[in-house]
Length: 397
Image (cartoon, rainbow, N blue to C red; front, side):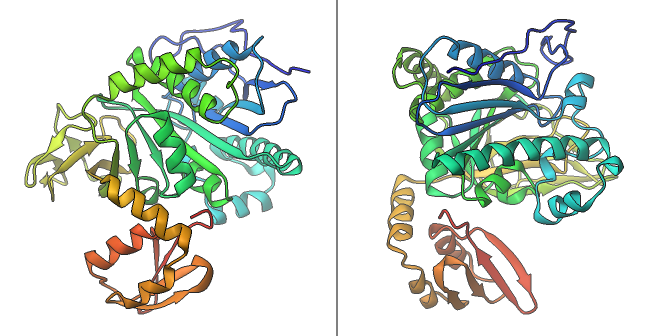
């Protein structure tokens, strides 16, 4: 029995970005479940209210699935409903920075009547995601998250993944440039939380907020992802067309890049990005990138620009990334599959390696070469504990 629903747009008004018709947007943008075996694919869009293109793309693709045989279950959800209706990034708290253990634990203990606007959005979205994941566990379904976004600057679209092999594999199959390490430099995104639960997750950044092509790019990426996941394997013509389109728009951007630098921005810094920057524009070391507290901000290394800040809100001015070679990607899969973690004890600065990949204990100021090896083995997150630094990786590897 097929379950499918798509908002009708009755009583619609024009959205603030792209002239998108948002209407009385509801949390569930659509569900498609024919009762056949297959993965649970969770599509989230509009976690930031000034990024409505993802909502439109999710609606479009869900509508396309109606009347077509599909495997598994696809659930498309809108993120910050209030912010979407107002055309604002959020209502005081960034909904895509609240997915941390302490924040979620406090939310569960808090009286819902005391929720601030973005906390109320978080509570409802969390409840739906946990309910869907619980159903999936009961049926043995794999869970995939596709989180749709757009950026304030122009330039090419891309995907963001944690450095976990399964998520990397999905992102590479979609075909957009893959950026590793970005979610490690952002506190509390939904992607980090879902992958930390052992699921597979990818963020899809479709382009600039107001660019009319952004919705189409995200729709193409969704079609390819659903085909790769086996949801639409009975009719792959649409996915083939979308894959060809993605190959065209990717251009000469390296297929995989690693986020190596983030420019922090605090309230009152008066950060102003130099005009003319866009995603994947080459950056030269020493090049002026903006002003902060009256001082010129210069690029520390040769790299590629990503997500330069051209909107009023944001805690990062820009990100810089460098290409990742195919040899490194293959080697990382091999060493993680073979569980060679104990060999890390031979690296300078490594004091101990905990079993089962739960952590590597290092001295402060570990050399860049040692850090590169830790990244190769999938260790990305580091915390300071007294006179030692503990690197950890997710259980999914």
